Amino acid sequence: MPSDAVPRRLNVVVGITGGIAAYKAVGIVRAFVLAGHDVHVVATENALRFVGRPTLEAISRNLVHSDLYDGVAEVRHVAIGQAAELIVVAPATANSIAKLAGGFADDLLGNTILASTAPIVIAPAMHTEMWQNPATVANVQLLRDRGVTVVGPAVGQLTGADSGPGRMSEVDDIVAAALSTVTPQDLKGRRILVTAGGTREPLDPVRFIGNRSSGRQGVAIATAAAARGAEVTLIAANLEVGHPPSIHVIAVSTTAELATAVSSAATENDVVIMAAAVADYRPERVAESKIKKDSQGDVLDLRLIRNPDILMSLAEHRIPGQLIVGFAAETEPDDTALLAIGREKIARKGSDLLVINRVGWTEGFASADNSVSVLDATGAVVTATNGTKLSVANRILDLVSAR
Ligand code: C5P
Image: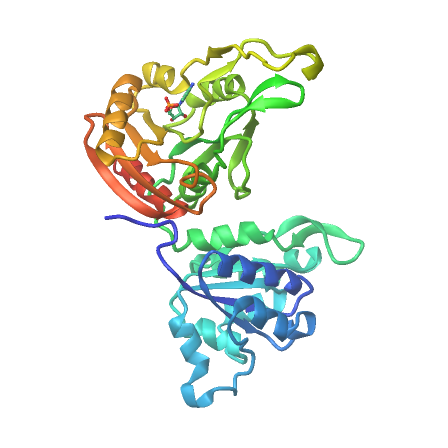
């Protein structure tokens, strides 16, 4: 049964309460919208003193709800909560946490939460004294016992000159924690190493031989694996894209650096996914200073030497039970020939799975979408899928999870 990191467009209610960190809630709303979700903001009257309704409506692309007595005919005080698939309260003030713990329904947010069976995630934000007050401590414990996910607060600079625990967690951490409550945690307890990007082989201090891999597919795999509960290490070679903060990243540039990073991390991981485009050759000599055309004339000869195959030696020396996934990006236009190349490659390299995709002048690299076939060690196609790189990532992880 396939599962997606975030299965589909979710109805997300972002509850905003009246604390100064309310301005950061705009970022949370934005992140959910950009991830493709339908976001409904329920703001308290005090929240709207800190952040403007037009801002929230523009960013959420929906009306902002705040008044319990608006939309009475459509029974809005329960309708929003009934439709919600995920509720995120950020910032959650000491007062709103107390009200939530007590089951109060004296405003629209309270009614929405009481009328909902969706997972609830709160991101507390308040001064340290309020966070550490026994009343707040007891209220937070009560909420945790009822299954509410509490993200943070972080320790750091507060609104005034003071600092300590009480600062609202970062937007990305709140969104990641919230989405993980609606994501199957089938990779929990698994350690997964992912390589992404493309290696660069220097010619001199300013030039390199590289490839067009952006790292999007590899980062999507790392992101999806983390969302599904895995502990992820990403070996990042010259990425053009960002990555979620929950992922441990080792930055590399050359194939030799990637090889060193992979070999030291591989023994600590249950799964290794080699999505990086690794240079097959590197210049035999790297010039100490910039190569000058004056000293070269009209033709510059470059001698390249073969790089070691990291995937092949990884598969050869694998730790017992380790699952190894390789990638093959090929320009072959014909499907049968593409699969034949893949079959030869998985047999030669010895990985457990091989993800094949077609690349070309206009295909594959920087795009948000991908189309892949996955072979198993016998050469059989076990999955053929296309869609966003995140959805392709999840199909690959379904195979990993099943094994
Ligand atoms: O041979 P080819 O480069 O097409 O193989 C692609 C797969 O092998 C990818 O998973 C890539 O990360 C890996 N590879 C490697 N070391 C190399 C070349 C490729 O691990 N030197």
